[in-house]
Image (cartoon, rainbow, N blue to C red; front, side, top):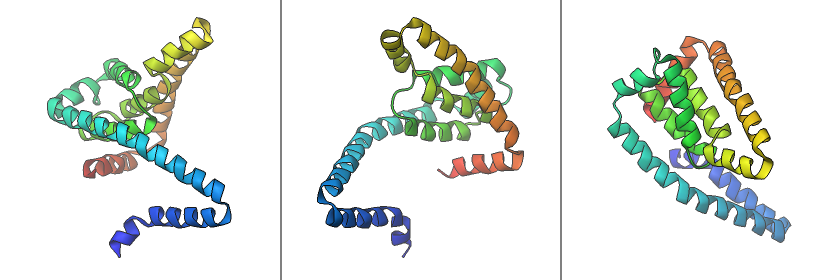
Length: 176
């Protein structure tokens, strides 16, 4: 029963997709094609991310992470969170396993949030595309607005989350 419970979302989605094929074959087949494409895309993205996670976990000690991105890291931690998030490649869902490793290594919560914000907003490839497609003025303006915006949002979120909830989040990261 636990096995079925664990995969209930997948099973329900499969049943709904089967019903969709019976109702409208063209839309049902298109839904399966999109799902297959997404699955194939994840197969090429997720394994390299987990390899990098393993290397990060082994190569960088908890003490080093705490020194450079932990509670006392200050501006250095913010800058590192931005650099790591901006240099990242891949979709946003790749940031969350890395954020969990950061939490296990003792990275300050606001720096974890800044890292996720940088990953989603200030990636270098996206910035280069904006430079070429939308112009220098737009790309630099967006970057200059996003950097303080990400920091502000991270600290606002940290102020709304009490220490007990933050501890629960860090405890959950330890079990992953």
